[in-house]
Image (cartoon, rainbow, N blue to C red; front, top):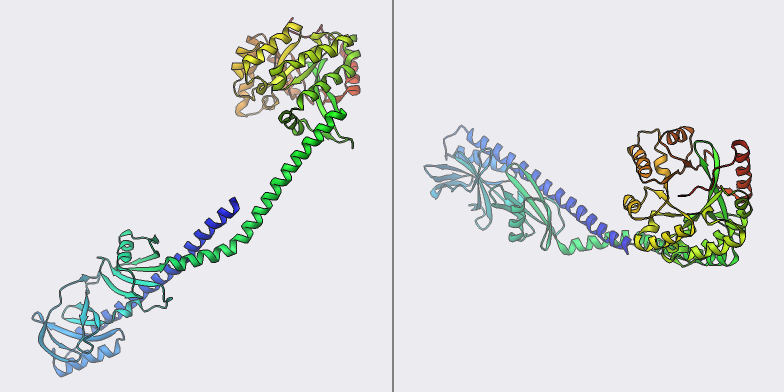
Length: 509
């Protein structure tokens, strides 16, 4: 549902933005209209002040009438003296009207007084504008004479909050709230936009009903794409689920048909170059000959209770592949990787003993390795570790440094070997932030009396660096990749021919 929810939000947000852009354009036009009207009025007042004739004479009244006619916004012009209106462009007033009280004064000194009545149109409410002795009456419609939809409401407000002109009867309470807020937004039943310039604030309102219609239009545009995305996501989830279920089924079949083989990563004594053993790495060979990576199938096997059967096949494969070599050379050892379930149950120890006894392989020739994840319950793991060590196995922590509590494991678990993860070896000779950690790991392992094995050695300078720091053993592509059994035996024999045989079995003994 996430694409649909996102599309609804985008539709809402897009509709708000578009509506406010439309309303902001109306507000900007209203401000421009107001500015234009006031410029014309100021020019008219200045022209009246320059009339040469005696105030309220026939020539003077005729001059005011002419200015009124020529200035379109002006309905009527008047002349004040002695605190009263003396005459207008319609004729003499006889001082019958008192001078206007100031409503609002613009930055340019024009007095603005709402709700005045003209002699020529006494029923119409006018906007009075005065400068010095002259005044004019302007129909407020001139300030908001812009083209809008009938549902759009407009208010022109002075800087002091006085409403000077309106269009389509805006809600006074809404206008007041928006004026005090001073910015565009959604207010109650309206979407509002505000434009400000100098003395004037234009407020434009649009009913929420119209806005809701805009939202629905945007939704109609966006929802098909959202539904398509949702359908695609559902399809992807179904595909991945089926693939995972399919992988589970394939894996169960592979276990039943014993499709797992073992490759061997040589372990090298760094100081001499002698091959002293190997790490057994499981591979799934499908019937078509393709190999599936362990990181693909091991998690599925663990989740579905198949990992024990795979471990059993690895143990059987090691004995079948290297039993003769292990009997011929007691200095040779093979490390078998265990998962958390193996350490929890301890069952694998019985499996190993049953396999190696008839084959004549010594227990100390089989190392057991587990990643830090396998030691998440140290108390339970220690039971299996202690039993394994009693039988003669050496125990190694694999991929050390990538877990959460490495030091805690070293202090609480009775292990013999620490295998430094490849990610730390990669930093040797670089400016990486983790490059300084590697020597600390080495020193910590040495201080605890552990055998040290470096994983993932790929360059000679890495090997030299590790030798200088006292790391005894290593493995990686610099020496050899993981090899099928026959190729490993050939590699081992060639290495022994060139360098001689290795020491007695490497262990805590």
